[in-house]
Length: 264
Image 1 (cartoon, helix red, strand yellow):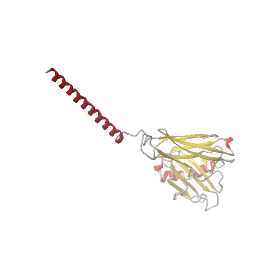
Image 2: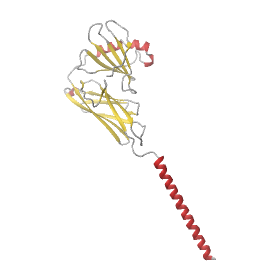
Image 3: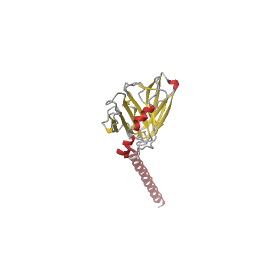
Image 4: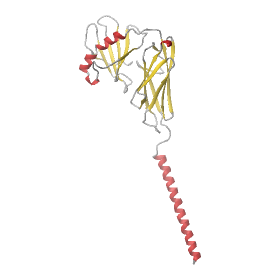
């Protein structure tokens, strides 16, 4: 009688052990299925990075970028997610290094649809030298880099006062006709020369907190003495989205909208 009871208990114990093992196997299989199908990937999500100079020249295109000492040379940076993984949709950290110039990154953590600005200002001792600016995008251990060469030529910026005068001709018209821009007489602008070695057509860029205003004007006589501005929202656009022209400055004509050229 005792022997049968002992055997029965051993049988029950074996059944319980088998059941426990079965539960463990089911849980393990279920956990594996969840990990494969539901759990986020531990691999970092890849991304691409695009660097564009102002005025628009895609990096990698055979183009000689020139500057002068003290000029703000601006490059725009945009990123896109190119695959799934950890960090997908999160910001990419943008940094930049260069020898021979001061460099500042505005809006240094960006997601898809956002824009960072890398501004380098060459030192006076860099005149007649070629500088190499390296821009990096980093996220979750992954890195993208672009290196751009900028030639610093011996030139003086003598256009600031005239450029500001040309810009002022557009401001009252913008206030009246495009109040949605938020540009007023109180808007503060910082200006810098662009393409310092180009003659006949002058180039200047102004920056406010929200806008980049790219200004050009034609040094000639009436009625060909036009001036134009191109507006870009600084941290959401890599290209200008508005263009306006005064067809003749001496003729005191009113600004009007024009089509955006491809180069801006």
